[in-house]
Image (cartoon, rainbow, N blue to C red; front, side, top):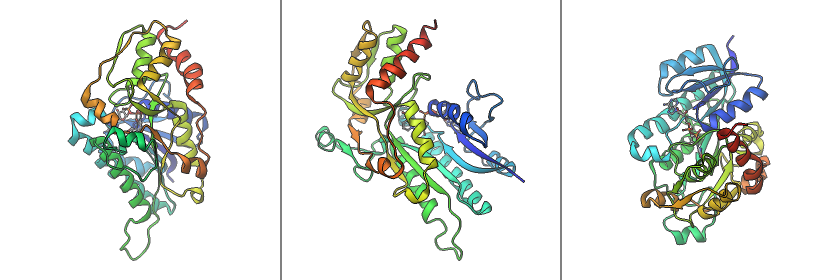
Length: 338
Ligand SMILES: NC(=O)c1ccc[n+]([C@@H]2O[C@H](COP(=O)([O-])OP(=O)(O)OC[C@H]3O[C@@H](n4cnc5c(N)ncnc54)[C@H](O)[C@@H]3O)[C@@H](O)[C@H]2O)c1
């Protein structure tokens, strides 16, 4: 018999590390982490780590010959800024990689006669508001509004959401027998801020970058204008949301893709919060007009009513608690250990 397991792709990344830290404490299943990077520190002996590429189908076949994959957290991706530099590579990893995993999860769902849960982090990059006026008028965007991404990454995310819905609801719709289909669930995350890892390659990175630079005593030039506003969330809330959505009974879910958010800040409000804790921080604004235009197309805030209603989503960290209890003490400790 194969052992039941949870697979986490992209486990060495920012969300992956935080998620795996939580899963090792609460999961009763074998955890298998997969990343092109080595296993994150601190999980040795607690997970089986495969250093490999999600596009490697023979590696995945070997994996399912040994384990009955019950849940997949598919986090591996190329993020928004990187994807603009290498759009074809982004398509390969973000779309084709997701397709390979969806196909594997579909086959596994049929084999075992019960749906594999496929948890997929999407993003505010799936939205694309055409101009600042629209961004001001549509402050709290709902899931079905303004799905016109202007980045390769956003296009990839939006399409993968649709692929996930297809594999959950319409896969092999012309076949004689209705297959057991996978159970796709997705969260559109705002910009995430972690106290323990430094972001790389995202376009909302200016928030966390300000904080980490301030804690290190380094000057930082923010690449967007002062008034640019987007939603953010503390990493522990992102992990809670992933776990809560995974645990929600299917009968309570009215959608497969949910907005979630915690607080919205303009870049200057973010700077002011950083200055409160690090009064000597040197933060200037030197907008990169091209990256700026991407952030301008993202919503100022998200309407997360369906997530709150269907599976009890709420953030534990509002802006004050996020900075005062989570970010500032932990980031300070990271650069200035006692
Ligand atoms: N961090 C955020 O603010 C944010 C917001 C919205 C959505 N997301 C999504 O959450 C997921 C995780 O994001 P993150 O911030 O942890 O990103 P990250 O860049 O820190 O981690 C991604 C991980 O995927 C791995 N990876 C990339 N290509 C791979 C491949 N071909 N095979 C195997 N592994 C591969 C990388 O090595 C990396 O460890 C991504 O899908 C991202 O799009 C993140």
